[in-house]
Each structure stands twice: as structure tokens, then as C-alpha cells.
Image 1: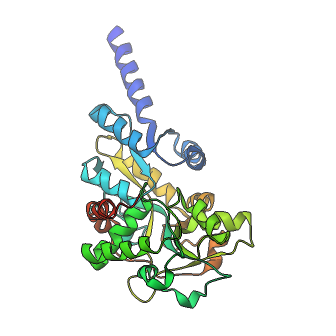
Image 2 (image 1 turned 180 degrees about the vertical axis):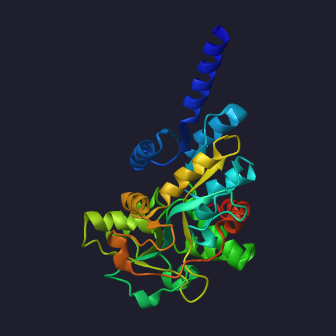
Image 3 (image 1 turned 120 degrees about the vertical axis):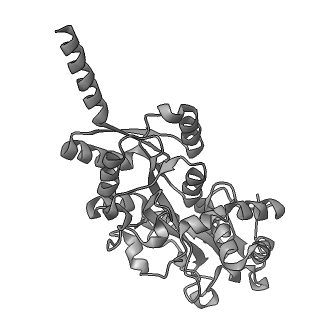
Length: 328
């Protein structure tokens, strides 16, 4: 009898364990919580969200090793997705529906992760002082015409690292370095801590042109519809504008891959896509889903079709350029 009771308790404990899915993320918990609640309602599975900065997520995962409770990692940038893949911390996705839900460029070549939302990192300009016809490509900002008229954010973080990695892929390391050198030579003032501060300076006449993530600009326009800074999607006649975004993968050690992929599938369904994209003014990554926020008014654009994993391979070269140019 005691043996039977012990067996039943063990089975019950295992069942309870199987009914929990844990996500490590550097994204705000508030964005994920509605989906966690929906998953609980539909599947009877509790979703535990652990929110930390990416460096802390990585450190915790590496410290825990095979004992980690994490099943999924949801992070904000292709640089981080590439890092997780290179460190062998993700296992391949096997769900055909999940793998086919996004454009080929927005999933790992070996199916270790898929994008969830994305943004364009593109040219922005003060429409009171610059005509859209004066700009076309990223390298335009290196032209002497823009001397003393360019603003940029710091290289700290990952956004400009990924952009430079994209330039390396398309132009080669030497030419990418020359382009960035020219852009930095054209700065009106020292680099800014973030895109918001940079575009505020632009609106105040400190500079005329720069490069920013679309969601930062969208947030500023949402607060002030008369904000004078406009987007111009770069490289429309060549490679397409550089895009980057959030992605999710299954932790190498997770024993709940099938359940984890069900949660990813939920994230890629239209209602969840619209929730996640609108909460951060990004573009939905799932094919066939269009944004329902003010960014839809900016129209469609040609995105760089280079696979994000391929861009990620050039991150070390991008970091070398940043160091060699003393780009703060």
C-alpha cells in the first residue's frame, strides 16, 4: 500500500512538473503575460516568465546547465539569437507549422529559433530641413554633403552592431569600415545614449539626418503626431532595409520541446502577433499579418532578405570595426 501511495505521488509530481513551461526573457513580462494566461486557459499549463537583462539570462542559463528549469528563451535581437546558437544553448525546432510561419530570413538556418516581431533600422530625417529625395542608402550619410549634419546613437547595445554586421555582409569589412568612418566623421555632436535622445536632438535642430529603429520613431509620433522626424526606408533599390527583431528558441536542456513549440505557435497566431507588435510598435513576423498601429501608414518596404543567422556571423567583424574606429 505504501509503495502504491509513493508511486502515485511520484506520478502526480511528474504530471505537475509537465504542466509548467518556463520562459527566460529580456522582454517585458507584461507583453507576454496575456499569452501565458491564454495558454493556461487553453492547455492547463502554467507559464512561468523570468525577466532579466540578456546578460543575466545568459549567465543564469550557463550556471544552471542541464538543471535549468528554462524551456524557452525569448530575446530582443539577432545578435543575442546568434550568441545563443553559437554557444549551443538551443535545440532545433521540429514543428513544421512553426518553421513555416515566418519568412526564411527570419528563422535560424538550422531551425534553432524563429522571429516573433521585427523592426527596420533605417534612415530618419528632419522633414523641415531635408527632402526625402536627398537620401537613399545608408552609405549616403558618409558623403561630405552631410558633414556636421548627422546624429547617431552609441554603439553600445546591439542595434548598430547588427547594422554594421549587415554592411559587412553586403560590402565587405573594409568598405563597411569606410562607410562607418565617413558617417562618424559627419557627426554634428557626440553620439547619443539612445535613438529617442538622438531624434529629439534632430527635432531641436542639432542635426538633420540619422539612423533609428522604427519603433522608437513610432513611439515619438504616437505621443506627438506633429513630430517632424520622418522615416526613409534605406536601400530600396539595392539590398533592402536592414531589419532585426525579437526571436524565440527552445533551451537545449528542455524536455518539453513539443509543449514549448505549442507556445511558440500561439505567439505566431494573428491575435498574438497583433498584441505583441502593437505593444512595442513593431512589425509582426508571421507571414500574412500586417500591423494595426500607425506604422502601417508608413507603407510597405523591401526588407533585406539575408538570413539573420548570416548577419549574425559578421558580428565579430562589426565589433572589430567599432573598436578600430573608437565608435563609443
